[in-house]
Image (cartoon, rainbow, N blue to C red; front, side, top):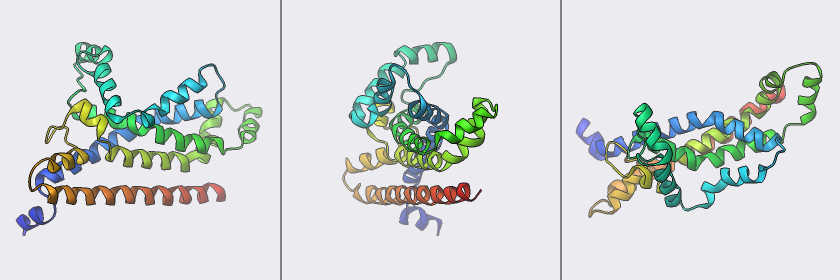
Length: 237
């Protein structure tokens, strides 16, 4: 029965790729979320020189070929890169060709989607509500935590879920930065690519593609449901 389960559904190698993708997507979303909120708030409310440049840099991964983004990550965070060499010599942290590097690549590629969703939510908040709280003597951080954050929570959740789905499907930057090492850096998209390069690999590739479609569709539906549920709760409070 157990043998049938593994061979009839997904092999251990295929399950390993799916599990690694889920792990990478989870950590990339969790670690980038605070930065996403901060950058979205800065772009939505800030007025400063270089605002357009920051906006362009945030959205650059959406425009650049993913391979270029991966190559830039390799130049920057590789063992001989400007930041990667320092991380290796000072802290013993190596990102290139490690699953942690896949987390970084996925986070960079998903970051624009996260920031955009959160920024739209912030821009939809009436600034007069924040100003009213500020005039009552509330510190800016307290205004954000008690007024702004509850109102933008649907956007934060939607952005996080979309970023998770994007991270699950990230391929170009990941394979360029961390390669395609089975059991170490081979994510779901990388495994599909590897199976398609060998004779008889169409079956496993098709199974993994079906898994990818189900996860992506579930993430989109969950994002929509959570956003509406939180929006109704905020509106009724």
